[in-house]
Length: 455
Image (cartoon, rainbow, N blue to C red):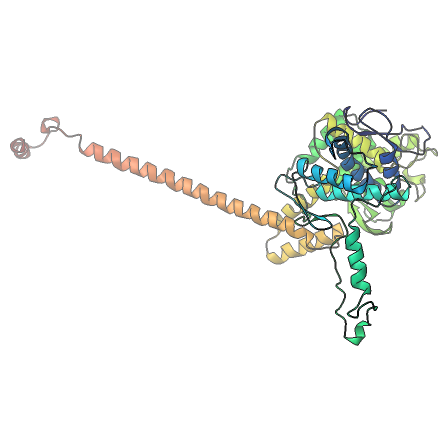
């Protein structure tokens, strides 16, 4: 097994292929000892959320647990995750302020958390991860208190507002009676730490060479055809990693074009509601993988033409369906070896940014721009069409930069012309004053006598 992080920190290792265990992943503490609370949390999460989200939660919690052991302080001692809610809340508040550069303001029964310019974009994920961790620990019977990340008073007040009416100690009257104020459709979150200025923004990644940096990193890490095909599809399709990893042979056959596959979308509950399109070169790599590398490890040892529709496209080296965790191990290893801080989701942002640039480059009218943006929204299967506005804002700024650069170039050109003309005039004026004596020039006799008289 290969350690993914340095010693003195909490880290995780995958179960080696071929080893039978109820854990596909095991977490270790800063003393390199198995740490079952986080291990159990991860596997409990996998039953409720996607594998990639479960792994993201775990990765967010690892530095927090390391910090608890090394820097936390409550009433003169280190905080343990099993401590009562009041101790955990103090530790989390300190972590938010000291490690995540947040400002925390205490209210009567909860805290407001305000992000600063130095705050990372993982604050919301961190709070969700801790909240989910204690939800799992309570469910598994490993934490005996209530969830430290839940504002129980907010739940009580919400219950009262929904059950008590204007009459003292009486239930609410029906809304049709007109004597009660309508129940608000939205309320404050029940979280103890409430973010008040957090707004998700998609990342703008505008490096045209990013895919090729990743491919090169994969070559250095000796990726197999499988890893390289998945990486190419990530950048060329804009899909989430799980939407590619879990493809079947039938998903490929379902489309008329050999450059397309059908796949599910986040929230579609496995239904194949969208398609992905990739390059002809990637088709060649994909078919080569299926008919060579995959064929060798498939128990049936058959190629594409004889595989059933429900056969997974990507397999582990043991012939079992590839999972996100098994694939991510190879991705993470390559990125670390090449010192690239790139998670798989950045490929999705890169794809959208690149597509938007093409939309603006090839469209001649505003109508064409809008039509192509609508096509992109449908392809990405965005539930909220406003997502694209952030990318639009980026390119609006980009167009301003280009226009501004042209203006600055024009100013520089004018300045050069002005200086050139000014020097020419000065030189011309100096040439007119170079005549110090009439003897230096030849004139006719009358003019020479006049000039001699002037001297």
